[in-house]
Image 1: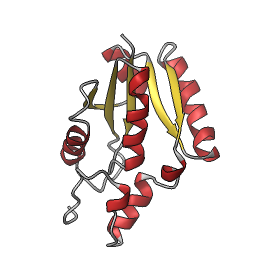
Image 2: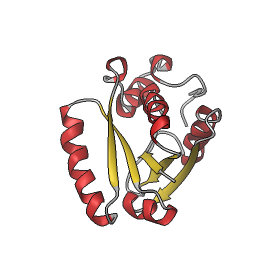
Image 3: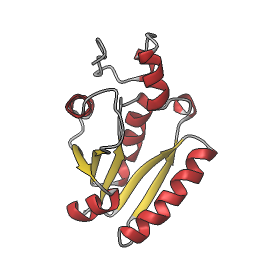
Length: 155
């Protein structure tokens, strides 16, 4: 069984993330959208909220499940039997960063492969970081987030 992990903070999930998973569905038997927990990072939305959004967004895709993990992504993949990481590339800076992480994961993860999908042009300008800034700035983020994500008032 070909299992891929799509790791991220998903703080919040964006339409670009959703597009990436949808496009990867034909490539894998199962995709696990996994929220990485970094105790040193400050998040805008609590883990429980991000997990719930992910479950709602991907509820109509039986191949997709949602999980969370701490520590190294490669070790999480080994623990659950995933041999692939799924990552999106928006630009050359993403490629440079992701290439290095991919090479390290390959070593630490005992041969785990990273599959890169290039962002569709209409999503290449969207990142969780920018969406967070839009939300904190009080502007309308709905064009950048899935319909299932209702921001409401900030935590």
